[in-house]
Image (cartoon, rainbow, N blue to C red):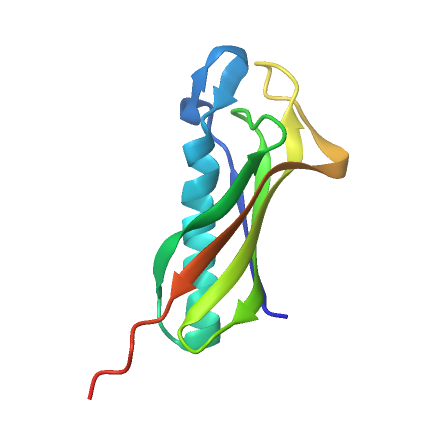
Amino acid sequence: MSKAVHRRYVAFSDAHYAGNLVDGAFALKLFGDVGTNLSIEIDGHEGLFAGYSSVEFLAPVRGGDVVEAEARLVKKGNRSRTVDFELRVLCRAGDDSGRSRVLESPLVAVRARGTAVIPAEET
């Protein structure tokens, strides 16, 4: 199966809620980016995202984290692509001192499944 992976530092300015929490839309934006990457690698086209069939928010994402977003192709139709997404926290900031730690095991923060569509060939 094909997959694409992006890593990103979560800036403290991305946190908008108490406890330095980042909103769920942050993960969905990363899923859009990594999903586009996957579409380009598979089809040579950015594709068009049709929607999510499921989204699960499993653990918090905070400013100062380092996250990894993965898109994995699970089904390829004529023009549709079913993609599983996962956002994992790899590193977590300890406090405002700038100290962070690499997590022993990545923390799965968000899982989703969605469908992308490749436009029909123009003739």
